[in-house]
Image 1: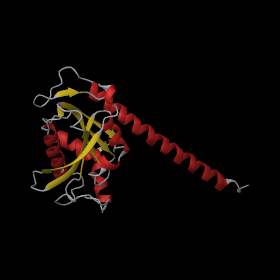
Image 2: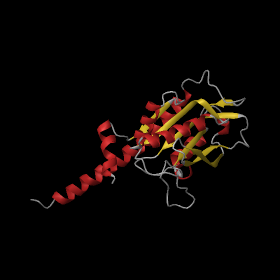
Image 3: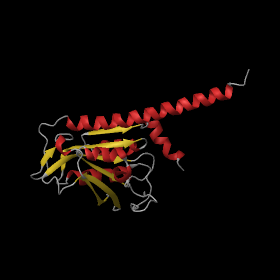
Image 4: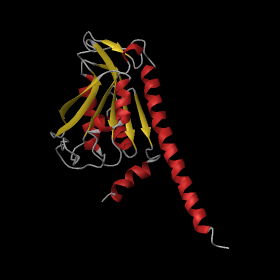
Length: 231
């Protein structure tokens, strides 16, 4: 009578994993679609730095996919610590005098994020459509992978110092000639929403057009208590 219990449980677990994977894939593509839709909304009246002409994602289909380059950057946080990041953007040698919508990636958990513009299919896909994609290591974070740089400072579990880091990066990005300053968004993953939400709440004047979150906590109880579970 009980012989089929284990196979049924295995089948149920297999189906659950399959559904979870499908949900994650759908979540990824929903996030990408949201980026493109939100960045196009409000196209009229887009301003740009200096004399650069603002270009919206997919505005020039003849250029797709855009040839992109990856560049290093660093900013000094309000704490005085150096924050290291990377930018993936349309090649300035091929697309001179153009400015593009930008999106800043915030990693999930307490993970480093600087190398995401290199290894993330999502980052490449967004840059290919004509967006400037930014990723960074918050204070005290870095990857053991070759080529990464540990940002100065100590871990802050997406608290006020990390929110200050993100604010400094947003200001830096908004002043880049090739970024359309009124078309900057943030993409967060999981616990990363704590950093982004806290940042824009504490710095309401920042030029952030939207936040797109994937699988972030739904209430403040989780964001307050999760850091303690990480010790």
